[in-house]
Amino acid sequence: MSPQQTNYNAGSKAELICTSNSIKSSPNQWQWYHNSNRLSSINDRYLISNLTRENMGMYQCCYITSSSDLNGCCAQTQIHVISMSYVVFFFLSFNDS
Image (cartoon, rainbow, N blue to C red; front, top):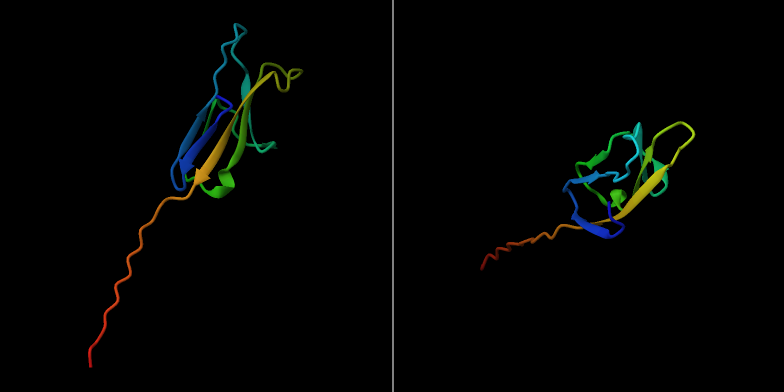
């Protein structure tokens, strides 16, 4: 993940993917955070299927290779959810009496 901000439309989906270029052995598990709050996913991917403004903020992924290495390496990205544009038409009818 890159540290840049990414814009998404409300209602769309976002898939965050974390990879490691390390020569070390594959990580035992991944840990995800949203605005410093731990998320339940332990995979290298985190999917948000219906983005809302509550999903905005900083996302971090960290890989854990052992119990003593709780946050071995972390990457982060910022998500910004923008509102979808809606065009609303009003039809008024007038009665001439």
